[in-house]
Length: 377
Image (cartoon, rainbow, N blue to C red; front, side, top):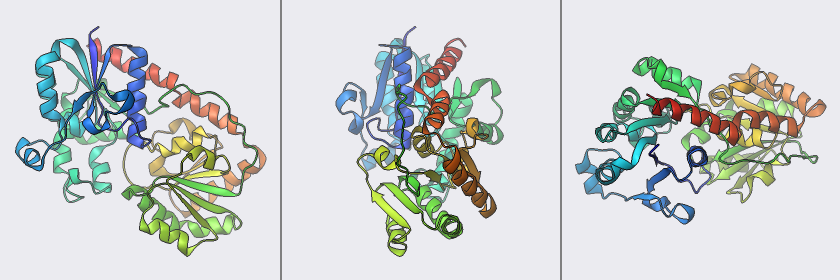
């Protein structure tokens, strides 16, 4: 086969949700097709081990306005393929809003396109008030590109079944071209979890300066914190992650005996070793919430809002994974996990169950399946 051109729209060198998911796909492609994968990525991300990537330069505001494209990749893709199109069978692109206005160019050069839809972008962009959706005022810019990418791609991949079904409902059925690949660890991991010094602590992690994280924590504070204090009067809430905003700092200041905030931890895994329950209160935004993977990877029982449970279907019947959507289900889930922690919690069992679904090797199997499907069409 010829080579695969992989367009990464996230920084592979940082531990963000998008970065880790994209790194997993890139590593899987390199493992499956060594020396047959070229990386295209924004210039500012091309440092260290990614220094040989095909660099996409930034744009001046004049070029943003004159180009008619909401992102910087379109002209670079056209210029690059004008010279090197014969080298490639397939282009893999992260995100429909990026693929939408390039897909005609790529097909023009006789190259197939596989789009990885990290979210149902309209929902994600609107919920997070991003510039692509005019800060929540209009989804038009998102819809036009995402719909074109979905309808014209040779194959669509989704992180969750819910996202796949949403695309099919809104943009039309393409059942034979749509596949769920989930997210997975970006590398092989070793089985070595034995933690015996747990504390009475429930943890919330993530990027603490994003809209969806702040909204989720506010929902927890307003609707569920009193239930937590009632059931766990001697427990602490640990909030850890990047760049906590003013509202999160204020939560700590207002409840210093209950809430502890750790900004920008050097090693999140060290913090989580002592945590008894992992809480994901995020209740907006599409896609798969990778922060839930942090808890499962560390072998910690999970209490998760139903929005953040998308994509984790394999764990729905497990005693260490509880979903809530109102105060009653939150109370029941927390009570069940407290009992599980007291009687039968096994970090190793949770970890091994997680790896059987989200391990790198399992991810490679799923990626190979969709690559073979698109290349054989």
